[in-house]
Length: 107
Image 1 (cartoon, one colour):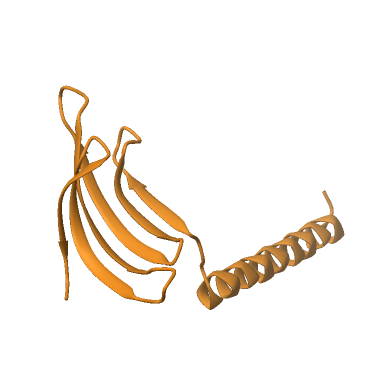
Image 2 (cartoon, rainbow, N blue to C red):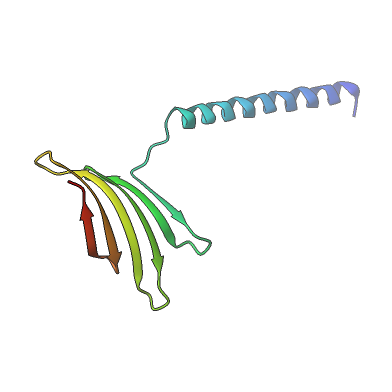
């Protein structure tokens, strides 16, 4: 390989690196500008959803749940929402197997 060939390879690598750096900067700027979703789930090492942040149907909520050894599910959900008539509600629910077993609302 001649010195000219090595020089061309270095120039090619430099151009490719500059291109990757530009793409990375564009992705970073996009993420920093805004990261939006309606639902975000944090899963444990087995892939089971443990914490779910949700923003749908005029309601925002945070659900934390645990599965029991018998397949049952227990969780607590904090929520804030707006009903169709425009009234606001903030509260907390205790959930077992998808059913609300206890509820507290402010106001």
